[in-house]
Amino acid sequence: MVAVTPQDGSRLRYAWRVCAVTSLGLVLIGIAGSTLNVALPTVVRHFRAGPLESGWILLAFLLVNTASLVFFGRVADLLGRREVYLTGFALFTLASLLAGLSPDVWFLIGMRVFQAVGAAMILANGTVIITDAFPPERLSQGMGVYIGTLSVAQLTGPTLGGLIAETAGWQWIFWVNVPAGLLALGVGATILRKMPRRPKEPVDALGNVLLFAALSAVLLALSEAGSGGLASPVVAAGATIFVVLVPLVVLAERRSANPVLDLRLFAGRLLAYANLASFCNALARSALILVVALYFQAARGVDAFAAGLSVLPVPVGIGLASPLTGLLGRRVSPYALSIGGATLSAAGLGTLMLTADPATPYWVIGIGLFLAGCGSGTFLTGNTTQVMRALPAGSLGVVNGFRVMIMNVGVVISVGLSLSVLTSAVGPALRAQVYAGTLSTLSPVAVGQLMDGFQRAYAVLFAVALAGALLAALARPRTR
Image 1 (cartoon, rainbow, N blue to C red):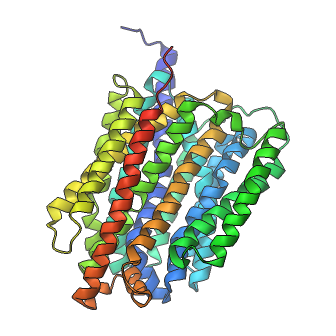
Image 2 (cartoon, rainbow, N blue to C red):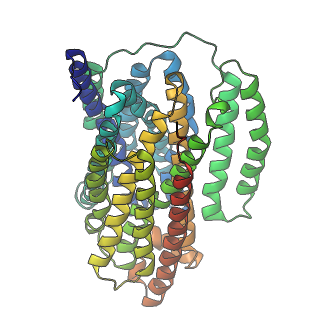
């Protein structure tokens, strides 16, 4: 038995306090996303938004958040992780307040952009703050609790979103973030210690601009492909800009003395395959709550509150699996946990794919959702621990920003791809009814066509989940 010194005990107590603060940030962002996923039809009906605006209410956040994660990871490395983290809370809270005051849908989309910037500051740094605080042998436990709190958000969010949409009004979907954000800001300012900054170095301005432009271009093209098709001029322009900018990004980062994205950090086999597995898992799981909530509203005709209750097996699965995985992490390698989680996610999606029908008993759907949730919780805990253990201390911020960015790219593609596959089964005139959750009132024929779309969407997500399991298996650490 290893003796625990007073210094070790003090560090561990501080680490758990840090875990509580960062988990609160993850809950805040998770609730903000999951409430809107369920309540989206209510917002769409209020603003009488078309399919384009409806998609951008979700995608504006994802695009900007994804494109700025690496930047804020690097900024925090240089300017102070605590300061950037707390600024993110303040900005996210203010943007949530203003979003509820939106006079039109485009103002709301603009506030979603500012929410995204604040969320990027939080997400790029939360995992790194935990990694710095915990002793290496306890990191999997801290990461398990941190990832597990995502289930609190996803447990609360869909139910809260549905309840708010039916009772308090769409504005409160955003205003509910304000007291939580102020609480997180106050607790974080009290508990988090100032962390040593890296020596001041010139900021890689050119690399930042090129990377942000390249990511924005490709993400815009991917999201537009879901609504406008591959022949859309926006898709062609975005893809062209991305292809042109990628070699320029590589050239600029190789020449920079302090690159925002040090490409040498991603040359290793473990990081490359682990990040690709994370991308596939994010793509496979991220649209699940949105797609299932639309299924219950558009195909079964239930209200937003009932739809929110129906998706609860996903966060329940995450909430149970994540802390258990953290405990297992002291005996089972993060590598094995990643493979097992990815495989379990695929099993859940396969169950949903094979049983997609308006008359499917809920217990069958619930099993599929629960398996997908357990798989996600297990994979996220194992994969995150595996990646963070493999990194040199000086690069934690930028590489974690890249890790979360890769997952968010999967989220953007997941939402755009799933909605595109889903709505391709019905004509353009009926797509607005799918987003508004009113298709079930039209005709059984329309609902039957939509179910073909749900089955295709689940099939695509299932195939991607299997690819994620294979990539997780390839991310084998080197034996020493």
